[in-house]
Image 1 (cartoon, rainbow, N blue to C red):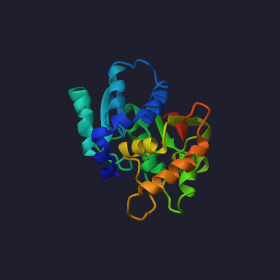
Image 2: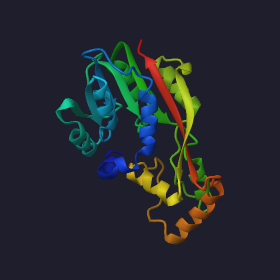
Image 3: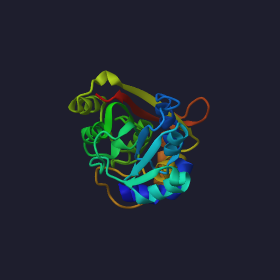
Image 4: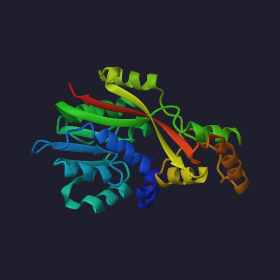
Length: 252
């Protein structure tokens, strides 16, 4: 995964409209201004866009990511105002109880077991601190998945955890399921190719399941476009619907 996101680092921001929309919705659920000296962890910081947002709110921020290329972009954006840490969300090289806030938007879905990074966030955030995260849910990009099903039998869209699986992971950490909100968020495109370019641009073309090598030819892409066209809405655009889990939890 680090390699996929590292390759996307240079052009990530141009393709990250959805990520920013989700992250801003999560950020709105945190106080607009923090107490002096408050410390925040931005886990899966990417190019540092939300690191910068947290800095603007007055936090002392540790920007953490699995990709050194992403961290380099974050440092270009935020400079010496933040500290930077190459880190695996499932095994954070951080001491217990050192952050007032942990913010992690659209990073945890790439972990093998959601309960593991949630336990790590619980560990590094002080009692009474806040853990704010988002993750993708099963059913995301169903329009694209359905279009590809008309073309071939291979898997072209990631399958994410179900609401039940996410609630189970939350229970393993000792948190209640009613602390979560599940919301659909729809982006719009003129063509299916535009959507697929955005997915490639953010490094999200990785599939957990093995797939055959080889690039889809023009004929295949035209077939996908024709199949996706069945979803075109009254405005003439193609919807791309993501199912998103939002969690804002006070650490106990």
